[in-house]
Amino acid sequence: MKFKKIYIELSDICGLKCDFCPSKKAIRKIMSKENFITLSKQIYNQSKLFTLHLLGDPLLLSDLKSYLEIAKDYNMKLEITTSGFYFDDKNCDLLLNYENIHQINISLMAFLSQSKLPLKQYFKPIINFCKEHIKYKKTSFINFRLWNLDVNFKAPRENFIIYEILSKEFQKDIDPTLTKNYLARHIILHQNKLFKWPNLSDKSLYIHGKCHALKDQIGILSDGTLVPCCLDAKGDINLGNVFKDGFANLLNSERLIKMKKAFEENKRIEKLCQSCEFFKTRL
Image (tube, rainbow, N blue to C red; front, side):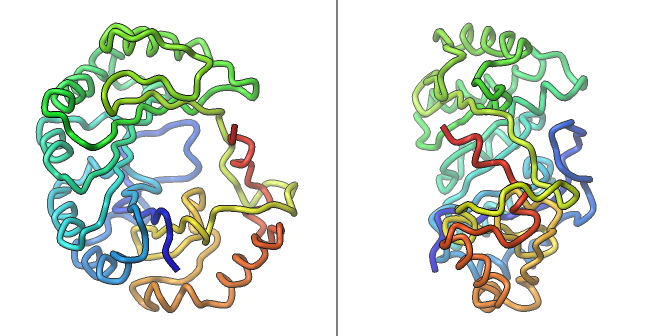
């Protein structure tokens, strides 16, 4: 079984408190470098892309370089997802100089949920990073994310100051109604509807439905817990521990196989999945 994407949570620490985030942070803490090596040995050939995110912000790791080196050693093509608050010189150099980094996703929604920095101060290192990216014609993609539009795909008022800054910096008109606004070479503003994170306490509304989980994607929390998708940030659907049981063995576990087969039959058998509304964001 080869996935399109495996989500790897290097840590569940992000330093922020966003209203849209589904659970408490800093519970599982940091995946050790030794464990990341163990994991990389198990999964390096099991996916086309590896996303360093589930909860937490990888740019907060003091020794992120070591993790990038390990991934590079195992020829793992990476995607980095960050809040945008930690674009210091050190991290900018890392993101520019590792050729195995395919995409950098910057969640601009994280800024809108904070009062830590003025907008211009927040954007300054990010824009400088983009300018260096353009200057050196890097092959990676920078994706700005605004996933906070309403059900009618209408942008909230607070987005417009962000549109104004991006428009000024990149000399591009921003169309709030588009899913993608191309700002520069390999730099894109992505927009989507706001989605509600699934929760076991919610009513089971969606008994039927297919899913990309276990077919195209799977996730690994920083403590080694295997979860079916990137939305199971609490590890509610615990499919075992990759450090104890091994990734390959867990793919053949009874619970995982039942879930996958049910999705193929347009059924959602796990309670968490029955409250998941991510499918509503698809355009």
